[in-house]
Length: 126
Image (cartoon, rainbow, N blue to C red):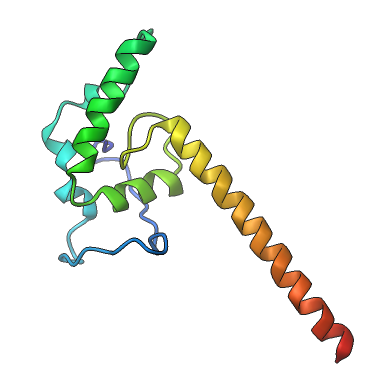
């Protein structure tokens, strides 16, 4: 879901590997094409004291909207880069985004560790 127009948006410069980037007018912000702009915001954000069953049903409905959205990847990356703490963005709940971010952090740490390990023998041999 989108913030009101007065709030700034930061979009990830590089989408995740293996995810095709759509061809579109690069002058138009991605959110202008978002399907959720036509839906009620209440579908994407929880009301206070929402029962679990109602929350799960609402989140599933929001994810169905996201699934047909042409800018789902851009929306998801926006929510991960910000990071957005609430709501369904790019087909992921806040809890699901926390899992994705934790996995990315672990992967980045493993890649850095592997790069250091690969660079160490070269420096010692040189």
